Length: 234
Image (cartoon, rainbow, N blue to C red):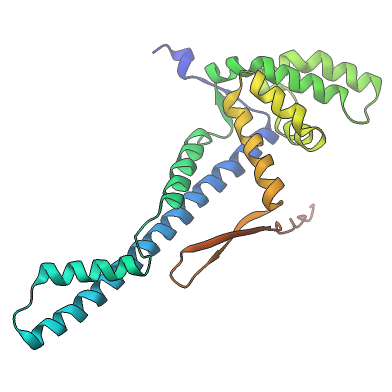
């Protein structure tokens, strides 16, 4: 494999910060999913053990103990109470979170081949950002002139991630259309998923109602994000 294929280009510091937050969120989602699956497994094992002990105690009154029969009885008890072990949902969440974490594992840079594939989309986003909002003519002209260079060399330009956020907030239908038409599918998928999630559950952290064993009963409205405290300037 040629060196240029595996090399990376630096990102704008603001984009790097956003990508790092996505990486940390993905890692935490994976840990949460793993914790939930272990709780589901432990609940099933606990019910199987309790059912097995009950069956063995009952067998001893009549004669010898059949371990296979006792084990099947315990498994039936667990099935009866819905303790089937790790469910498909947290397994899928863990798989997606691991994929997302891998994609954002180097948040301060991007693969040069990937960057080359999404340069047209990046240039469009830079140009759209230059023409949007309340900017002076000189500022618009400077940003338009910088649109192509910033797409080719992200570390020299202004951030794209905030432009994605504003695009989805102001015109989500057009934003989705642009995403599906442009080649940057990996970059485009994240805002699209976030848009649908926010439409249903609101902004903030994902929140679930769980029972005592850690099983998810249903998803609730997202918890509002904690306010960020400004650090004193020395």
